[in-house]
Length: 210
Image 1 (cartoon, rainbow, N blue to C red):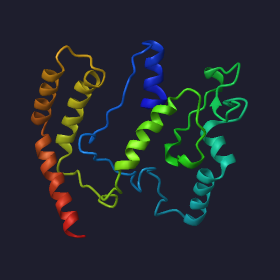
Image 2 (cartoon, helix red, strand yellow; image 1 turned 180 degrees about the vertical axis):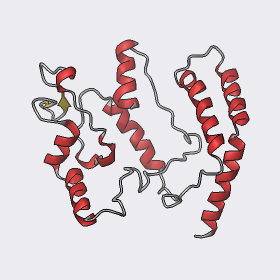
Image 3 (cartoon, rainbow, N blue to C red; image 1 turned 30 degrees about the vertical axis):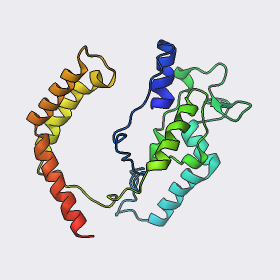
């Protein structure tokens, strides 16, 4: 959303704002490829025809005509192509009448995505080159976490995150250092150290079984 929504929108509202993206792990070059569960899709164990279900999913993800239809809508109504092959809204487009939202992350296929005219693709390519130099395969894609013993702490941490993170993310505080320190103290009070210890034990157990 940084290169497709946040940066372009900030440029409209505050020209020259040059909104950048700083990724967790940047200092140590710690970034992984996407996990095998990224799409969050699965065939139910109770499915009567699992092979057919997979065939449908394969069609939606890999057939360009089906992919474009379910992801972008009808050409000429929801989108048109520019001379350089990018996607934009057609003349006369009315979001109240023509909008389509399928939240197609569950079937996203980067290999056949059509770039739109509203995103900052130069910035996307810049940060992708950085990722490609440093990324490693994600080693924990088959680790199944058990949150049953820390559910109360996780709920409290989520509340703290919601209270502080918006102002931290957008720099809406006069004293960022003090505000982040306050945020960390609130996380500690909510039980983040208990959560870290519990998850670390699960991680250690997983690694010991390799």
